[in-house]
Image (cartoon, rainbow, N blue to C red; front, side, top):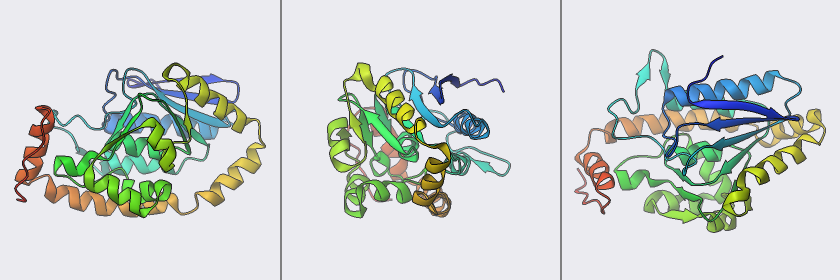
Amino acid sequence: MAFTSIGVTTSGHVAVVEIQRPPNNFFDITLIEEIATAFEAADADPAMRAVVLAAQGKAFCAGADFSRRDVGEERPGRHLYKEAIRLFRTRKPIVAAVQGPAIGGGLGLACMADFRVTCAEGRFSANFTRLGFHPGFGLTATLPRLVGQQQAALLFYTGRRIGGEEAVRLGLADQFVPLAEVRDAAMALATEIAQSSPLGVAATRQTLRRGLADAVEQATERELVEQDWLRKTADFKEGIKATAERRLPEFQGR
C-alpha cells in the first residue's frame, strides 16, 4: 500500500520502517495504522527476520500534537491507542532507533519495541501527569516491565525527562552510542538477530512476550477511561497551556 507518514525499505533480512513526519514526528491514528500495517507486512514476508523502527528529524516521536483539536479522535470502532495493540501482536523482533525525544505516547511507541538504541540526544519522558492527564499507549503495562514498578511510578508521577545514558542505566534503553551511529547500531543489532534461527527466535520471542499484548489491551481499556474524564478537567487545559507556553503548570486539582 502507499504510505503517507512512513517509509519502508529492506536491507538483507531486516525491514526498516521510518517515521517521516519531521521534525517532531507527532503521532495520530493514521501513523499508528501505517506502522502496524508495515510490521504486519514484515510478518508475512519470510525473508524478513527483524525490523528497525527509525525516524526522520530531531525527535523519535514527540507524542501527540495537542494543538490539534482531533487528538484522541476515534473512527467507528477505532481509537489510536486501540489501533496500537496491533503493534504488540506482530511477531518479528523490533529494534527502535531512538535518536531524539520519545515523549508521552512516543515513549509508548519506543517501549513497544523489543530493544532500544539511543544516544545523548535521546530523551525519554512519560509526561502525562505534567499535562494533567493519565498515561496511555499501554505504558502502564510496558514501562514497569522494563524498569520495574518503583521506577515506573517515579517516572509517571514526576513526568521527569531522562537522557539516553540514564535510560540505559534504568533498563529503558539497551545500547548507548553517538547520535550519528544510532541507526547503524540499530541495524547492526537487528542484523545480528536476523543471523539467528528465525524459527528459534520467533518461538523464544513468543514465550518471552507471552501475554504482553493482552496485558497492553487490558491496560489500554483502563487508560482510556481515565483519560476520558481527565480530558474534561481545568487541570488538563492548564497543562496543555503551560506546555505551549513553556512554563510550569499551576494545577488546582479540578
